[in-house]
Length: 101
Image 1 (cartoon, rainbow, N blue to C red):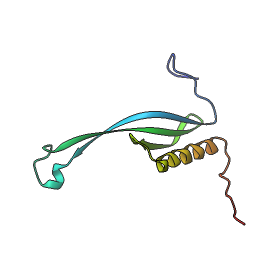
Image 2 (cartoon, one colour):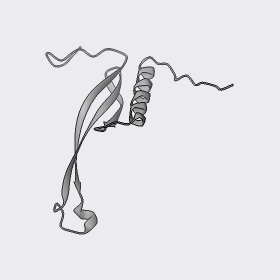
Image 3 (cartoon, rainbow, N blue to C red):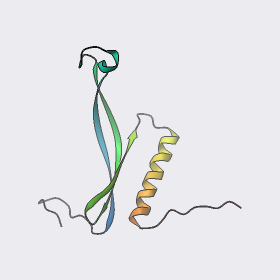
């Protein structure tokens, strides 16, 4: 059940939330340059995917995977692996390992 009217009910047991999130970070570059604080501050913004694991309604873990403007194949592989791990966790199945012959 939900505490807030109009908010969707959360499933019982284990479940995974996957959502797009925009993060902003303020970097004060003047500290390294020895100048006055705030003089060379820069705002950086990143889009990313947040994968959150919940058990019995409580947040267990959360991972944020940045999305580049032009993601590489390596970026895609990282995202796929993180989604796979989250789904296996939700299903309570350990990842299968392959053995070479």
